[in-house]
Length: 315
Image (cartoon, rainbow, N blue to C red; front, side, top):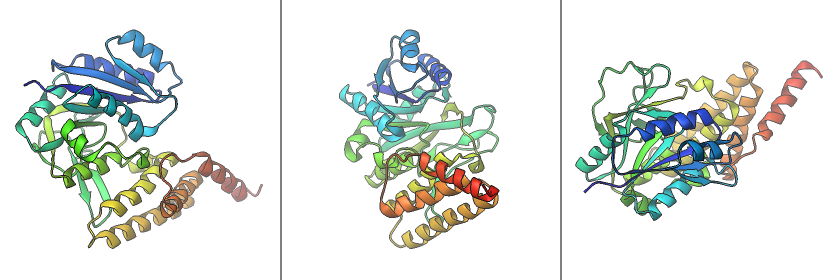
């Protein structure tokens, strides 16, 4: 039986990237695909341009930015209602090789216990360099890392079970979604795919990295490149994830190291004059303590950063 696959692309602006991604989806050699684009209230003409250039695509326009987690959930629900067997979450800043979907479906067909499969992800500008060959969680150090990031791709990573799949290209089975639910909107963005993968694994499914499926992703490999808003969600959601999922015997150590790392980050950003980064981290820690999840207004740390800079300048 040929599995029915829904390709779900979430976008928030980035029109040129979205169009390029959809063109790569149009070239997929898998015969039983349908494409769903979910737009998180872009203001760059994405909805109109996608409708004109890709009339075969189902387009869902959200009234406002729901974030990565809930925005993708809109597409996941639509795909499940349409009876899809597999749900492929795809970032709009990616390009897929023509055989990517076919390779992932073959992996699902040969791994009946798999609930999630994911491709080899290569960097955007250097397609010979790995961005993610699956993910690994370090419970002692409260970390989740993309395996192979920054390494030349020498086909050294074989298909294997992994701890998580990078959310830029994650194929979820309908059976797993129906068992564990969808992405947790509390995360808004970042760490939500690690949480989903962990829940799928806890429900008894396997997580499989399939290197014959290949794609490129436009994302930095350096943590130092994170802006203050990204840093806020990464910091806060790291605390949420390990507070939820760390094994009982390792949870105190994991959370202590996560808090210590955040505090060191605050000090480091202050020394470098990155006041918005420092304040975003402080707000993230406070919100985690208060169990304030979901969207956070970036004006909070931006305003405080401006005040800090003014005070330093003696205004």
